[in-house]
Length: 238
Image (cartoon, rainbow, N blue to C red; front, side):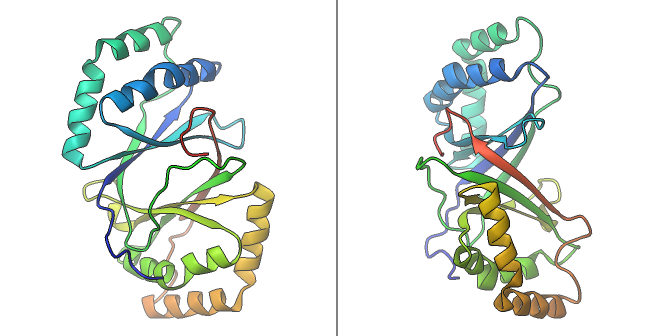
């Protein structure tokens, strides 16, 4: 796959909110009626908001975009100081905290082999967030395999490449982490696609050659994590 001729250097932020039992409606209502409009007011671009397909997993995942880290800090400072946000936050938590713990957040940028991330809403899609952890020193090898083989083979087998990101310098495990999102018609369609992908001789050859070149596996033990996600009703991307 070709590298992007004009790389997208904007900053993305992946945030994950773990919701306290019984508080999902309150959180979603706050995002729907207050947070998203106020994000827009303060220059914070909402890309997508997703909940896990598994209803037992109560973690809201969302992706934001900014021109730069400096712009992000300025936007969030203005957002947090906005009286409308402070009032909405206070009202939504009148009966107690909504989140079970502090939010997780990662600042990331698109890889050179990622397609541009589009805000679109064709509907009916299941998304999959995948996080790969490599052994030290092998992230470049993993990138090469994705760039030259994996991305195209995913598409060949019916998977839609939504976005590929590296964590920015200074972020946890930045040197060993690749995160990306795919979309599928359903979880069952994803399983069929991955089965065909795994059996493809072109994939087997690419994997063997890349591991031989790197001197071993390109993912650490337990280093492939996946969560299937569905867009919320207020997500710009569906």
